[in-house]
Length: 346
Image 1 (cartoon, rainbow, N blue to C red):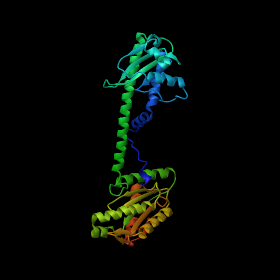
Image 2 (tube, rainbow, N blue to C red):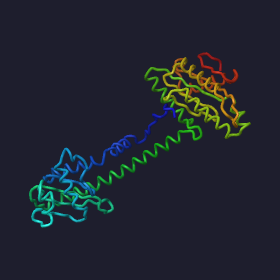
Image 3 (cartoon, rainbow, N blue to C red):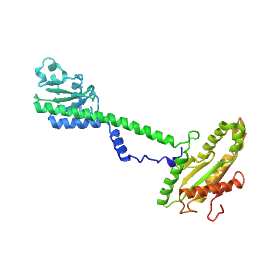
Image 4 (cartoon, rainbow, N blue to C red):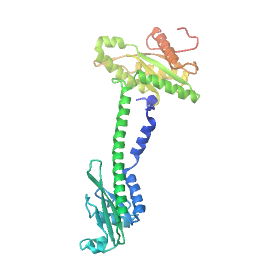
């Protein structure tokens, strides 16, 4: 696909869409780390984890070996709906035997608070770890509950953003598909006209010329009569491939009519556009296409126009000039190129 129209953007609701994309782009680990940093300051503990079932190996084990040991210790405990508070691990017969309690780093305090999703399902736990016995007062319990709700809302927002992001991707795909000719894979008429308007504006701002051309397969009506619609369509598909090989990646190629192609050439002068038209004409003429396994010689007529010859022309005027040039090329006979010139008779 030529990229001349690939810069099309969804303009409606663009700020909201951009915000959703930014939210979706943020890694989940970064969002969770934000709550863990808040927990460290809020509860004044050695470490605060938000675990979804496994912490060990989550990252930073080489740079922060103590944190990795704390994560391994937290993994001894499964996710639970219960609020767990062990004020002094050394006073609990079973807990006192755990490696990181009985030995380095000598963890003394452990607390776990459940986090549920919007449907009430357990999805995570807030884990607090410290190296001295602690008691949690009612205010701390309330703060833990508040943090659990905030995490719940963050997870719900993450899910919504992901869903919205997928919808945006699907909408863009559908919008793009709506601009593409289903048979040829080129831009359709509406898309190529929009491309012309956008590129003309860009070129004028950059003080560069723009050219466009109409290309018409001379034998298409005979092919359709002799070989049917499907046979003619196959020729058009191969011709599109041939044309694409003659233009730049950022030039835009579109189907303007049933058998007529419009090509937008940003930055191309009338000399360049004529050279491109000749390149297309020769490429088609010198490569016969198989029709029912019989090589068939094809030719095209081309009409071109450039803004360096018509600097004040708007998109509609440029299209009209190129169409008249194409008509002149047809009148001159098959396999010809005509450029629109000021003062040229219509």
